[in-house]
Amino acid sequence: MTFSRGSPQAAQPAAKIRNIANPAALGAQSPRFTLLPAGGILMSWVEPVPDGHALKYGVLRDGRGIHKGEVARGNDWFVNWSDFPSVVPIDESFWVAHWLINKEGENAYHYDIAISVSRDAGITWSAPRPPYRNATAAQYGFATIFPVHDSAGVI
Image (cartoon, rainbow, N blue to C red; front, side, top):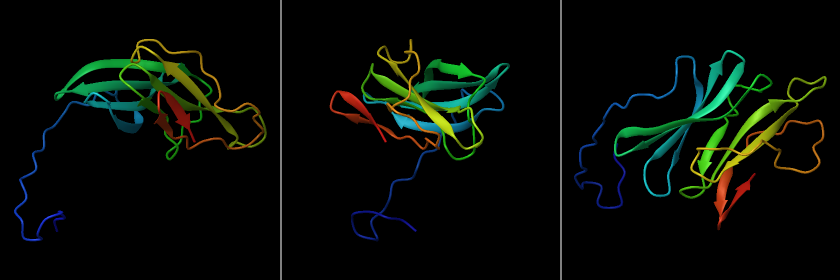
């Protein structure tokens, strides 16, 4: 079945599929893809490291990987199958990342969001901090980061 704006009988161009090498290491999980403002794709993922987990990313432009980096790592992360960390380019140099941190307490599902900011397209990252002022023992997760004029919003 095809979908188009034109006539249902309009011929559709053949799709071109090309394999691209995955920049993530064996055992990586939670991939997320985002378009870069000036073209290209940013993929972020969580990778196991000897001391816990790391949030990493790779940039693809013109069909080839041009940059790979690490946002943060830690041994207190809440890593699960449905609530993925992310790296989001707000503009070419201003990027925002988030991941989940286990919270001390009696409930395994009480965790926090950590936010870090890069102003040089992922080369360096700020110290992590939560996106809210007064955290209570609860589940904080499923964050979505998005551009708001020259800033970033988090829901």
